[in-house]
Image (cartoon, rainbow, N blue to C red; front, side, top):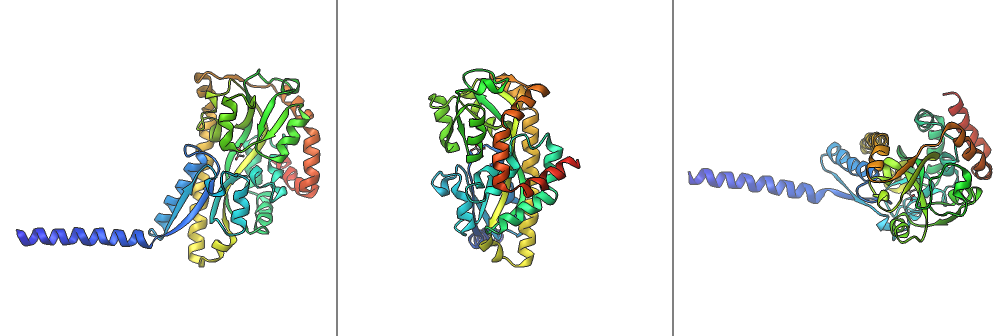
Length: 333
Ligand code: X2X
């Protein structure tokens, strides 16, 4: 009896030790993203960790840091840090990369896309590949595209039905292109970190903001501090999972294949849960007390026309050739 018990104890100890050694030998990789830990960005990043860990028998542990904490709260800085090899991975959206890679603004040109089909045709096709090439020239290897989504406008002053309704509203925006779009609409835009936006809305420092419903507005509880939402779909913002060239090139081919596979699956999952949350989102936001306005096709056309100056300015900036790569693919859909 006694011997058996000892034997069992020894076995348990050996298993525990093996687990410990396994954990100890896992290499930690750091992943930064700039939303909270309830968002689909975060879930996608955690999924990547799970999948990579399983595929490599626990050789890698991807530690996920939300709220841009590794870049001192600066959401635009993450891309630069990955580019320089100071960070292994980033999950962020196109607009956040535009200070480093202005071409990334092409995705989010006002009213470029009419729906998900057009979006997928570009991310899965030649335009997506072209953007990966451009990003790689900045030493950021884009492993897979995910989704932030169509950005919808919210505010506390009034329902937004026409460009005139935007006049004079103090709007928080994430990046430079959106400043031009808001100016074209006669609003007063202000660039602000996402992590500071909830408080700014709560305290009335700004009247409104714009973000996608499923990925951000719901999980970050924007409905607690905003009354009106209009589904104007004015700009699409893709998310991507990227890795620094430095880290990427440190992997052998077999590891690269596993990292790539885990990234593709994780971002497909992230896109999927984002679209699901968006589809059921309007009802949920109404339950939470928001007043939702869904502009008609004609009303959308008025927004498209009013934002055209920003479209034209940023087409020049990203390069008309690149815009054409996108519009050709979209038109062929
Ligand atoms: O800052 C935003 O608005 C967010 C969270 O959508 C982005 O990172 C672009």
